[in-house]
Amino acid sequence: SAVISQKPSRDICQRGTSLTIQCQVDSQVTMMFWYRQQPGQSLTLIATANQGSEATYESGFVIDKFPISRPNLTFSTLTVSNMSPEDSSIYLCSADRNTGELFFGEGSRLTVL
Amino acid sequence: AQSVTQLGSHVSVSEGALVLLRCNYSSSVPPYLFWYVQYPNQGLQLLLKYTSAATLVKGINGFEAEFKKSETSFHLTKPSAHMSDAAEYFCAVSTGGGADGLTFGKGTHLIIQP
Image 1 (tube, one colour):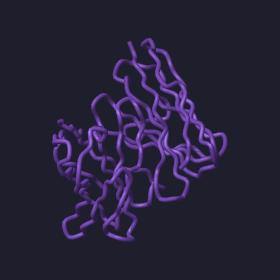
Image 2 (cartoon, rainbow over the protein chains, first blue to last red; image 1 turned 135 degrees about the vertical axis):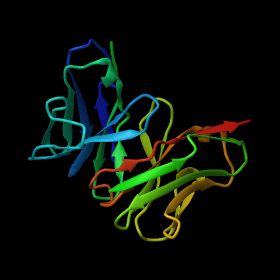
Image 3 (tube, each protein chain N blue to C red; image 1 turned 180 degrees about the vertical axis):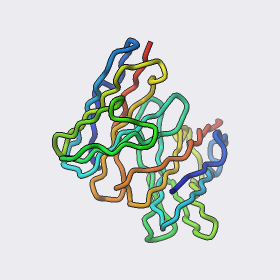
Image 4 (cartoon, rainbow over the protein chains, first blue to last red; image 1 turned 30 degrees about the horizontal axis):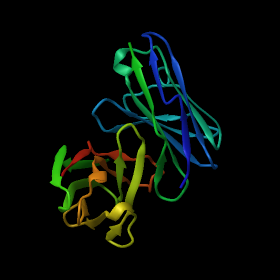
């Protein structure tokens, strides 16, 4: 299975600031995905990140709020911009290695005060 | 569009008893179905997946699930619960085998009573 590392694992942020989450995969992958898991909730897909093209955002998520980069086949970043307490969530990176399943990182737990 | 319904946000069983976690799906095309487990403060780990091969799928940690097209179900079972099975379980569906992302159910919190 693929190993996916996320940084930071957790952070406490002030309202109005932005935070960038990094996701590193131990092998080249075609598709990478970013999910949000709000407290006590299920996972919601934010966007799909493909190398060499703009990320594709799901309904309810916009690039200005969640800019994503995908500079190569093993790395992606998600920025949570102008944060508010409602952005307090776990953000998970995942990757599809063309095996028909998604592998997940351990998540980045953000608390916005 | 696709969706997943997990019946029961919390399921409690005694150690050694049968575990049954229910999942029903809706998909306009033949689905790929997954069960993931999330232990406290950890990411998601794949338990098993259905990708149109055998309808009875065996996964890790003694779990298995059966795909029933007529019932649009993919229930997760384990014959004998262990204390270490206590976790959050998510059923998920995809139409592209993961390539289009997954749609997750709301999750079922499994409680194991001694």
